[in-house]
Image (cartoon, rainbow, N blue to C red; front, side, top):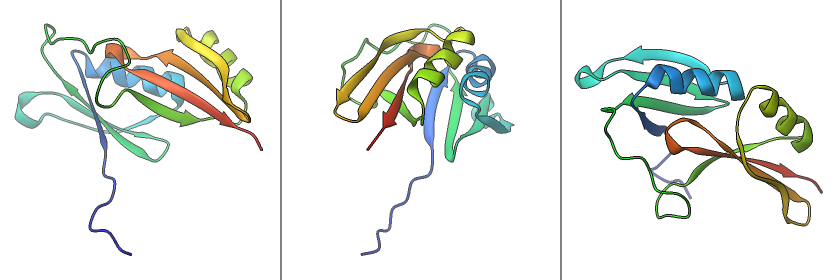
Length: 128
C-alpha cells in the first residue's frame, strides 16, 4: 500500500544554531548542507546520517524543554555497532553521558547523551 506521506526533516530550535550544528558535526559526524534566514532567523540545515535536521534560531529567553519523560518528541536515536567504542569516542569529545550504557532488553544496549538546548541523543546497539 502506497502512502501519501514520507519523512522530510527533523526541526530543532536553538538560541545559537551555529553552535548547536557544530556539536552534531563534531560529536556525530553530521554534515552542514545549507544556511538560510527564513523570516530573518538563521536556520542551519544538516544531514545526520540520512536524516535532514533543521536547527532554527529562537530568542535566548525561549523556554527550555522539561526534563524527560514528557509528551512529544523526547530524543534523537542513533544506531551504533559498538556501544563501548561509541561511548569512549563521545567521552573523548566531552559529550556528557546522561544514562547508561545499559541493557534495555536482551541483545539491545542503550545510552543517552546531552546535546545542546536540552536535546538528548540515544545510542542503541542491537546484537543478535
